Image 1 (cartoon, helix red, strand yellow):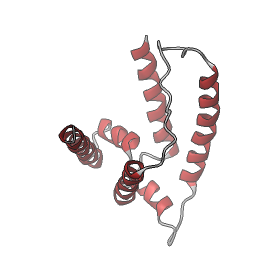
Image 2 (cartoon, helix red, strand yellow):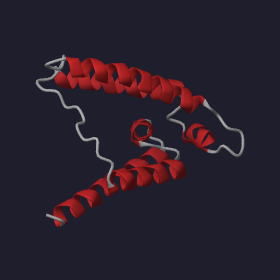
Image 3 (cartoon, one colour):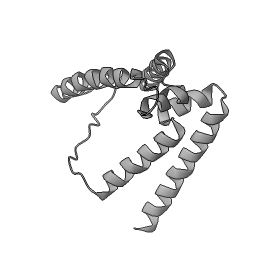
Length: 138
C-alpha cells in the first residue's frame, strides 16, 4: 500500500511540474535571471507549495501516526551549520547553472530528454561522492 501511495504522490508531483512548466529549464532560468525578461511563475509555484506544506506539516505534527505508514519521519533539527549552508550553496549553484533540480530532473529523465539524463547522472555521482566522504570520515 505504501508503495502505491508513493507512486501516486510522485505521479501527481511530476504532472504538477509539467503543468506548471517547472520541468522546463528555460522557464526556471528565466525566473532566476532578474536582469532580463523576468518570469515570476516559479514564485507562484513556490508560494503554493509553501502554503500546502505549511498546513500539511502542521496537520502531521498533530497526528500520532501517519495515514499510510507505520511511523512519522518529520525533520527535527533546527540547527543551521556549515553542512546545511554548504549544501544549500551547492544546490543553488547547480540549480542556477542548469535550471534543473531533482524533481524536474527525474521528469526530464523519464521523458528521455538529454538534459535530464546528464543532470540525474551528475546528481547520482554527487550522492556517491557525498557517501564516500561520509564513510571516509568515520
